[in-house]
Length: 168
Image (tube, rainbow, N blue to C red; front, side):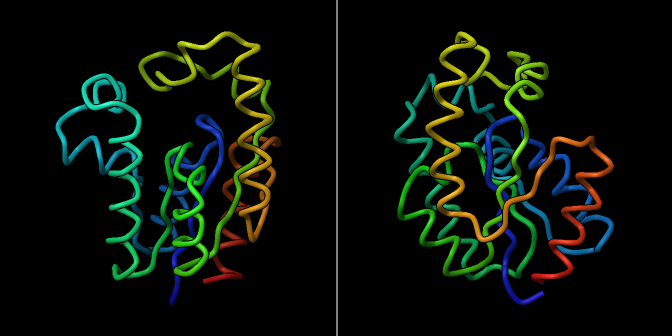
C-alpha cells in the first residue's frame, strides 16, 4: 500500500467499525483520529470539546493529519468534522484517497447514543438533518470514492475491502 485511505462521513456512518475490520483483515495500518486524540489526551471527545473548545480540537485533528503525511500508509478513520476544513481536505487528497462512507440519515439517527456520539446526541432531529445536508455536500465534493453503507454491516465490509484493494 503506497497511500492512505481516508474514511470520511457523518458520525455513525460506520467509518471506525468498517475501517478497523478491513485493516485487520488486510493486515494494514489503521488509525482512528478521534480514538488517537482521546487516548493521547486522556479525555474523550466530549471532554476535549468542553475543556478546550471546538477550534482547539479541530486544530489537533489538523496537526495529526500533518503527522500522518509521513507515516506508513494505512486506513484512517477521520472524525466527522475533519473534512470540513479545506486545508485538511487538501492534505488528505495529497497523501491518499478520500472515501466517503455514505449511510442514510435514518440509520444514523437510530444509532445515536450520547456516550458514543456526544456531538449529535445534543441536537434535535431537525438540527441533525441540517448538519447532514451541509456536511454531505462537503464530503461528496472531497471524495474520490463514495461507498454506500446502507445495506448492512457485512455488505459495507465487503464494499470497503474492495475499494481498499482497488486503490491501495
